[in-house]
Each structure stands twice: as structure tokens, then as C-alpha cells.
Image (cartoon, rainbow, N blue to C red; front, side, top):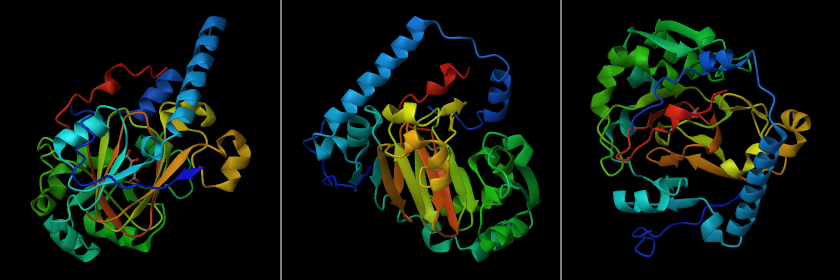
Amino acid sequence: MSKTLPSLPAQADDMRMQMALRQIDFGAAASRSAPSVPAKAPEDTLALKRQDWLMEVQERQRALSPYAAGLLTAENLSGEDFLHSFYAPGRPVLIKGAIADWPALARWTPDYLAETVGDAMIEYQGGRANAQDYELKKEKHRKRAPFRQFIALARKGGNDAYLTASNSAANGPALRPLEADLGPIDAYLTRAPGMLWIGGEGTFTPLHFDLTNNLLAQVTGSKRVILIPPSQARRLAHRSHVFSDVRDVTDEARLKLHPQARDVLRYEVRLAPGDLLFIPIGWWHQVRSESFSTMLTYTNFHWPNVGHENYPAG
Ligand SMILES: O=C(O)CCC(=O)C(=O)O
């Protein structure tokens, strides 16, 4: 079941309603937790079933109103409206054209990026084409290359090479010349730097959720994002850390293995240059690039963002 995007008035007067997850080590957390999964007491299992039941009932109730159940699109959304209508309730929103005036939007072609950063060595995620678990086993997929060579790989398209947020700690100095092309997002964020994602057409980030609230800022190209509310978790074979064994809810072969995910409630968003997408903590998402793409992700909101600190990783 896929939902459409009603739009939110520019000034939503009728709706008055910190930085982390830079480098959460999914691989280490998963392998630490692998050896023993303690058996659940029957009362725990019943409590979990009751929690799932409540989430489903609440989701059916939200479906009574397209406003409550739809994924909203906004323009010129003030910090206050963002906080009251989206950040605090944990509700996603697509904010159209919010960074359309950044110089990067006109400049960041593959040629410009290669000329500006040159042959500085960078880290990226490689060897992904024949692997399924590149996000879970990030360490195994860390590769290094001169940036110009990485851009040549990305231009070819496909899922093999992707510069992701998990490479950003290693790439700070090399990518610094690009920072002058970015602007601030003062309404929602402090001035801490974002994490850059660069890849070709066809990069794919499998279904997972983040342990922080997350703001995606699309600069070059477009991405298809599928968002699934936390209420659907029991359909998503959540076994390894923050990942779903379903991986891709649009892949028939995966759905055959996980038929319970077939009718999951989901929203589809096309992220275009200049757009921001707010993904609240716990919302499942998978992302596919439709073209050569550059994007930044931010977690440095003006408001607390520390859910990762006590996540029961297992
Ligand atoms: O753009 C992508 O490929 C993935 C982004 C993402 O999943 C995230 O920032 O959590």
C-alpha cells in the first residue's frame, strides 16, 4: 500500500502543534551481539504482541484522515513549524526547494567535483556489486582511491562504488574544498558539517532505520526513497542491528522470501535537487539513486537527538 503526498500550506498556521550517529559501528555491534540471544520469557513475548497490536490499531486510526496518514510536502517551513509538526511528533516531511539557492546546485557536476578535489585520496565503500551485506559489514568494504578515480567509477553507474556517510570521518580534509559551495540550514540545524554521499545511477541502500533523526539534503540528481513507519516493524524481519532481512520491498524475489512484507504500509518519495527530506528516528527507509547523485545528511538539529545512546543493540 503506497501513499501519495498531500501538500502542506506554506504557512501552516493551523498546525501549531544533537548530533550523533556519525559513526555508529553497525558491524561491530552486530558481531558483538551475534553469539547469544537469550530466550524470551512468555510474558515478554505477550507484551511485544500487545505492543504490535496497539501500533496496528493506531495506524488504522491514522488512515481515517489523509492529513494524518499522508506523507506531507512543505515549502518555506519555519523552524517552529518543523519542530511542532514534524520533529517532535517523529513525522517525516519533504521540504521542497529548501536549499535551491546553494551554489553547489549549479556547480556539482562530476567534472567540477573531480577538478575541485583532484587526486586527493578518499575513502569509499567498494566491492558492493556482489555483496548483500555491505552496510552491515562496512569495515570489509572500506576502499581508498584518488577522488578523480572514484568519480570515474561513479560515472559508470551501478551499485559497486558509493561514497557514504560512514566514510565521512576519513574524508574531511580531502573534501574540504567543496564546503564553500554549501549554505546553512539555520532554521533546523546548527552549523556542524554534514556527511556527504556521492554515487552513480543505481546505488542502493537497503532497508534499515537510523538511531538518530536525519535530514537528507539532495544536491545533484535524484533518489527514490521508500519510507515505512515503525508500526510495520513486525513485517520486516528485523534481525540484524538496524537492518531488515527483507532488504528491498520492491524486489519480488525478496518478497517471496518474506511474504509478510508484501502489503506493508509504505510511502514513496522522489528527492530532487534542492529538496530536504526529514526521516525521523525509527522510520525504515531504503534509497535508490536514479542518476549520478550527491547528497548530504545532517543530524545536528537544534533539538536533542540522542536516541542512539541507549539503543538495545542485543
Ligand atoms: O542515500 C542513501 O543511499 C542512503 C541514505 C540513508 O539511508 C541515510 O542517511 O540513513
